[in-house]
Each structure stands twice: as C-alpha cells, then as structure tokens.
Image (cartoon, rainbow, N blue to C red; front, top):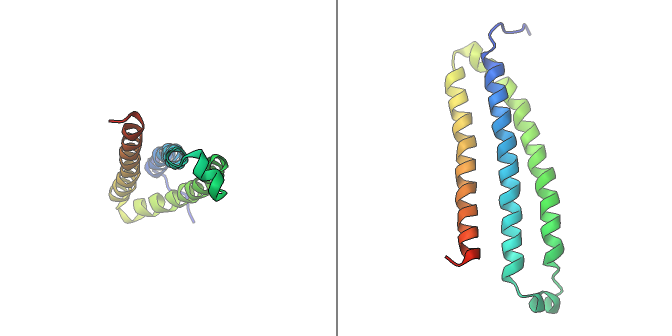
Length: 125
C-alpha cells in the first residue's frame, strides 16, 4: 500500500484519538458514578443481610471500566486510521470525519446528561 501524501487523514486521526481518550475518561466516570449511586441507594444493613458487597463492586466496576473501555478505545483508534485513509482515497474524508466526530460528541453529551441527573439526585434537586 502506498503512503498518502495528504496530512488530512492523520490530522483527523489525531483529533479523533484525542476525542476517544476523552470519551474513555467520561464513560469510566459515568460507569463508576452509576455503581456508586447504586451502592448508596441500598442501605448497608440490607447489603449485609443479603450478602451483597456493593462497596467492593464499585472498585470492580472501576477496574472493568478502565480495561473494557480501554480495549474498545484502542480498537477504535486503530480503525480510525483505516477509515480516514480510505475516506481520502474515496473522497469521503470530510463525511467520515463528521460522522465519527458526531458520534464521539454524542457520547460526551449523553454522559454529561447522566452525570447531571445523578448529581441532581444526590443533592436532592
């Protein structure tokens, strides 16, 4: 495969990689916040009575989020290179970059809304 002479796919890849890192961090935060909210919603007496250990579950969810979302993010970063290089060759780089960026921003917006709801429930209004 010959190298492309245009820097555009690489610039798009760098921007998308930065956004996916931000998505990873926000998804991890939301996942842990949901687990923490569930832990706080169940009284400790009920947890002990039923044999639940939700305090440990929050840490486990955090570790899963780091690993699971990290693997997904790495796979996406690798695939962005292919998507953008072939998009340049086919003349659809702008369209592909727009779709990928819109999806990444949508993840950020949805996570922001979830965090807002969780924090408003925690503060009581």
